[in-house]
Image (tube, rainbow over all chains, first blue to last red; front, top):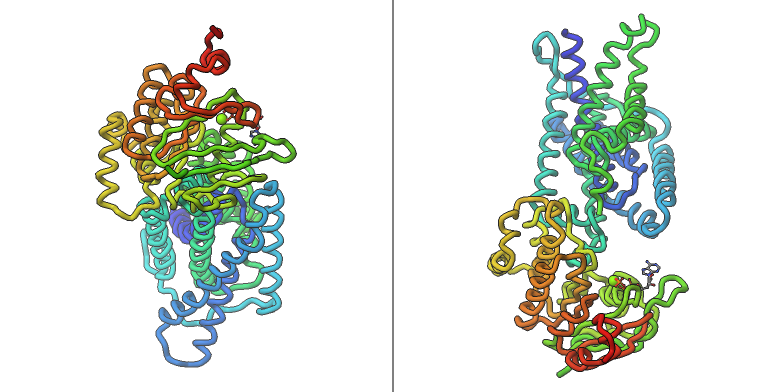
Length: 309
Length: 240
Ligand SMILES: Nc1ncnc2c1ncn2[C@@H]1O[C@H](COP(=O)(O)OP(=O)(O)OP(=O)(O)O)[C@@H](O)[C@H]1O
Ligand SMILES: [Mg+2]
């Protein structure tokens, strides 16, 4: 029972990060039907930049409080991530908007490879370590432990997601985004500049990616140039699980995937008689992806294809 | 009277297919003009090209005296040129209220938007009853009401309507034509595309007849109604 609760807590933490990243996939997909495979790399860039800034600030020994140091890292990383996403859309995806779907998809993979290699050139192949400025203090909770870092991750993610829902459902921009997602031509006939809306989706997605990058680095204490690939793939799985194109779905899918993975990792040893260890946890994410694609391709909250105008 | 919209030698093609082959058409300020013609004549194509949804292949379109060939649709809407597309173009997952709000997207006079929305609800009480529901749950006729209401809320100078009566029951068709007339009476200039040639000509001041991408007849609506060719081809009557 303690293992169970513990893994739920761990899963919720990781799932919050997946959800933040999944939102970026799902917003872009919902509006232009593109699976932006470079999105995971934006998370990686966010993590690497934030971590570099944190390291520099700590190295300078200014005596700043750790929370502020991390916030500065995020403040530097976020606009850069947004700039990258905006540029990728303008330069790589927009010219292909009326091309067959495969073309922008391949291009997205290309952008992803470019970003990964740039990161490797800038930061090298080694892992960057998070300086020892935060010592997670565990709080006991029904036999399991939750750290203050975990609470921070879950809390920040929940706040941001609530904010996003508010923007999408209560503001002019949000309404324009939903209208554009349903029918670009008619949205144009309402006076909406769909290029602005599409850019906004990329910018918001990248801002969330930067936050996710910082949170995941904080959690694992490391960052490296290829961390975006697997994280992106899992977040994409989360988006598909929830129903790609659906915001609530991305949130639900992220949290569920995190929990499935954590429970899987917690019990896989017992289930296989010790044959497979918890480092096989990635298997669960991709098993989920396959199962969803086979049995419910529209995802848990996904709209029926016929609803799309 | 100066034309609000003026097409000269206007051409549109799909790839190599010439769908509109150089037409001349003008709509004067305050006028209600209809464009009638058989299926596939090129009516929708003309309207879409005017709105910037598809490219123009040649000729010129002037709106308020300015060349709008190549302008993008959202810019035209901001200049008062609105269109209700064929098939209505309702946002099915947005509520009725939100759809109406989309119509007023370019406006900033929020107080006036409220009273105008109320007016639309007066005009179509069904929409008020269901204001919080997704527009996709409306019947075809109700969706057409919504599409028209949305267009009214954009406060257009020129309204392009593509077959607003398509697929509707007779009572609804009547209501649609009454609404078109009411919008026109408020001073909105309208270019109306219709299959229902008789009703269209009855509420219009002038009309154009389009056949395979060309304008074959044009003139006062009353004259077209009496024209034997029109009567035979579009009003389903035997030539006298
Ligand atoms: N996307 C397209 N690609 C190629 N050809 C098209 C396309 N859309 C329309 N056409 C062709 O252009 C011609 C004119 O079509 P259009 O839709 O303008 O006719 P219409 O007068 O509006 O007819 P209807 O009364 O049936 O709506 C038709 O021959 C049609 O097949
Ligand atoms: Mg048509």
